[in-house]
Image (cartoon, rainbow, N blue to C red; front, side, top):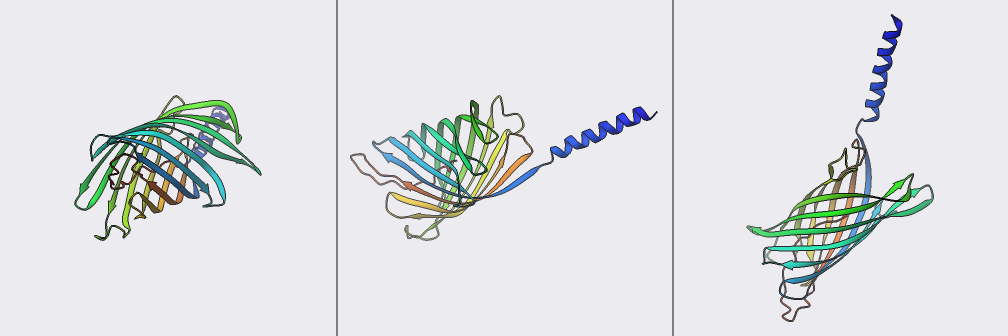
Length: 257
């Protein structure tokens, strides 16, 4: 009689142990995120895109990643544009005093729609990314890569507070990221990014936004998450290299990682 009871108790304890290992874990981090985003107009419809991003952990103390992206954009009309390009990311992996960088290659396609709601400028951005991420085992990069496709949608809006264009405007954005792939089993949801701050014009072609961004991300395990409290400072440079040199309004752009 004791053996069946002992077996049942063992199964229950094992199940509880497995369940305990799957309890949701949330790690709190602090980041500083800086970027230079350039969109150079070379003709009425064609643009060249070149972006550079730096993200550091513990605000400025440690490396997190470096990211460069190149692409081409095509402006269909004053409200609608498309873009495509490629990028490379170096992600820091720290093991004790040793820091190594793993690699990620990606290509992307994007559609962006701008419209107005009263004096508020709304921007809808839909982006698809094909990603090849280097696998890391025990903080050491391997020769294997993991492929996934990620889809991103961002709604952002700029709210002017003055008729003077040199006075900072309020800037808000919310971006949802989901991904799929052979190794994406427990976390179809990737992350959500919520931003609030200001947008400031410096010249007719140069502006920046500055503020707080909360990044909530789910890891591959499915039960592990990170909540990143981020100070974000993005610069936007839109020089007009076409013959007409017609100045265009700077739109709020998609935030990257």
